[in-house]
Image (cartoon, rainbow, N blue to C red; front, side):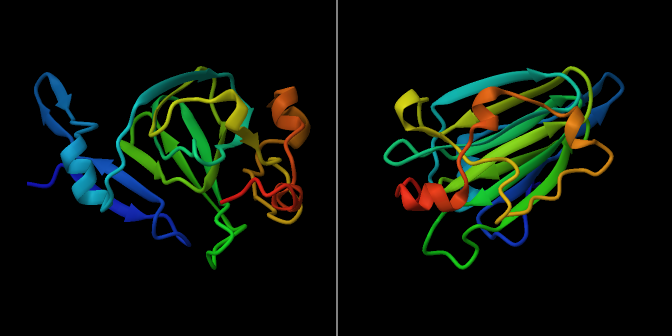
Length: 192
């Protein structure tokens, strides 16, 4: 019996949604959310996670688009524990045909899905509900000196954030407002 189902997030073959099977009974349900061996089997790679992060966000908080440059690049496995988000990834791998392209997906605390984001992608999300809780695994430890931010509204990428939220109502940190454009990151040789 398969406990995990992998679905690629188009246009990327490497980024995938992972659905965890629920095993219900009269008490509720049980679901295995992470197993290193099974994860490697379904993802097709040997990513090992070394750090778990948790975030709590108010409604309309936008976080991102974050990444760490090499040699501290991070793969991430993102799960919403409570609430709902619009989760976004942007391909920063210069040699790939999908360079500069983005994909977004809604994740919530009840759909039992996770998003796997490999190294080479920027990641961010917009909280669509109050008290949204996220848990995400990272394949590399946080290194302040390697942390970078791609601007969330870069005109060359044109992310379509959910239209029900006016941009003027988004809550964005100074750090994320000061993120760099894709062109500037490319010019600085900060990409993959």
